[in-house]
Structures are given as structure tokens and as C-alpha cells.
Amino acid sequence: MSNKPTDGAQERPGRIKQIRMVAQVLRQADPKALPIVFASAIGTLVVVILIGLLIGQLWFFIPLGLLAAVAVGMIVFGQMAQRAQYKVIAGQPGAAAAILKNMRGGWTVTEAVSGNRNLDMVHRAVGRPGVILVSEGPRSRVGQLLGAEKKRISRAAQQVPIYDVQVGDDEGQIPVDKLQRHLMKLPRNLTKGQVSELNDRLQALPRSMQMPKGPMPKGAKMPKGPKPKMR
Image (tube, rainbow, N blue to C red):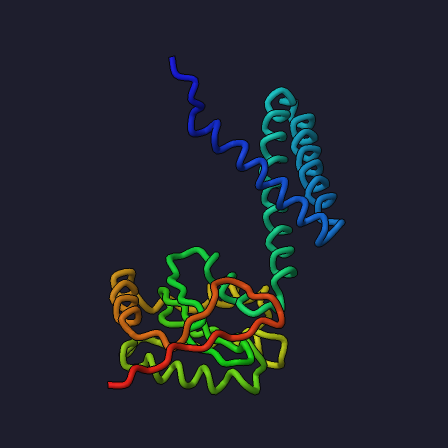
């Protein structure tokens, strides 16, 4: 008889450990976050039990209240964890790319398709709205990067809408914690098939530069792009 644990038994400790790690980070980022999570869960349980008392079906509403309390607690925990993540990565080069890669909805993200030695950069996201170019850096410097990248991909994009979004703290820019909400409000201009075709055309374009993935520590330098070959 095999003593090999089931897949569920293998996954459960990992999930618990992950929740503990997130809770630790959350406690360090915001000491009030976990008390808020527990208060929301307990408040939900109390409300459901009171409803059970009022209608005389306490035996049914106690387990229902426990399930509701866990669900509400996990939702609030997830929201708090997301805010803590935004707070940790805000201001770091590559923060916008990290947000883009965690978005739901079938987005294809290509990090740092353009950039400069000041760690200003442009990321490309492709989805149902079309092509979204997301810049990181001061407003006075990223405009030129966005314009050059839009020109570079315009032929491959053809008639597909190209949006440009500046992420930062300058006037007219979008804070990194509001980037996902902003992109989700864009209209859906393409079908899934058109998105796939668009991705194929854009992926065939040569990369103008290469950068490490994810947020980079402050003080890091932009790697040099490949030198052109002489023919």
C-alpha cells in the first residue's frame, strides 16, 4: 500500500504557509490591517446569527454564519494584501509591469519594450481594448519614449486602437495602485481572435532593448542594448 500523500495534502501546507507569509508582510506594512480582517469576519458572523435568532432558525444560521465569516474575512484579507503590495512596490522601477502581469482577463504583457538610462521605461499590454503602452518615469521624459514606441508598432497594429498611460506621481499621471482599475474601464474593441492575431504581429517585432523582469531596486542601472551587427 502506497503512503504517498495525495495532491491535496501536498498543496494544503503550501497554501497555509503562503497565507502566513502574506499575513506577516501585511502586519509589517499596516498594523491595523489584520484587526480589520478579523473584525469584518466576526461582525459578519454576529449579523448572521442575529438574523437566525430573529427568525427562529439558529441551528441553520450558525454554520451559515461561519461560512459567511470566512468568506468575508478572506475577501478583506485579499484587498488589504493587494494594498500592501502596491505600497511596497510603489516608486520602484518595474512596478507597473508587476501590476500588469497580475491582471486578469487574458492580457499579454511585454515588459520594458522601450527605456533609457534613467530607468524610465515603457511596457506593452495587449488585450480586448487593443494595445496599451504603459510608461514609468517623470512626465517630462516619458512622452518621447511613448511617442517613439507608438510609431514603432503602429504598422503592425494597423487599425487597432493604441492607448498610452503614464504611471507616476506627476500631474496627469496615474498612481500605480489605480492602474489596474483604469485599464479595466477601457472599452473592449477586439474579439479574442483579433487579440491573438495582434499578439502574433507584435511578437514578431524585434525587441529594442532587454531588461530584468519585475521591480528593480533603486539605484540600479539600465542594461545596454545589443550592438548592431555590421554587414
